Image 1 (cartoon, rainbow, N blue to C red):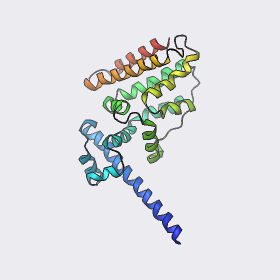
Image 2: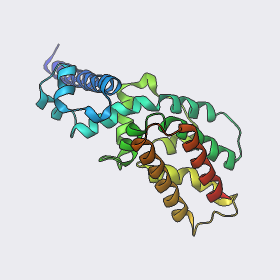
Image 3: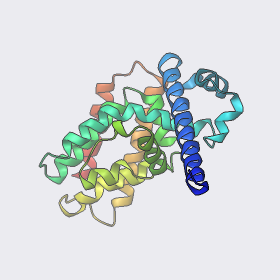
Image 4: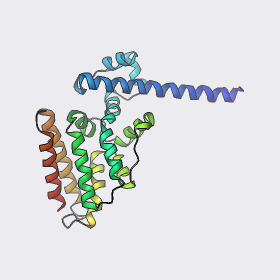
Length: 223
């Protein structure tokens, strides 16, 4: 190799090593979430599991919270597959809206602590970046969606994601107008947060009942 080729080769090797180490950290975190729960995670536990020194984690992530968010996306897999299937359905805006929310509810109430942290935690205003990075690391988990669902799924925060679902109803739902879109969206996000808090505090609460409550609220605000 000439010098230029060698530099390119070494740069590619460095990037590949960085990617592999990042994957090791994410997988170690996922394993610990499964065995010990998200509440008991620590930098020391994750680093030990991944086979690195504690301080190494900061070479790859801003902080432990960012790493936990990346690891949490594994729990989107069933929801993601459902959205991919939904992308091919020919539904009217109202039915489409309710179907997406139903799939969402089924996912989040099964793992409330994980999703509460994801949508309302420290880095919950940078979800686009987090999700894009995750699927670059694990492209085999990435599904294909319709343009509307794609935009929603990669929304920067839960408020934007919810608004993306609500906007198509503004032209077809009598109760939804440009003047009240923001307040309806605020109510929706606040109620999702409230229900997730209830489930986190009392895990024995029925996920089916919470899903029904959420769906009834949604039907109320879009009618």
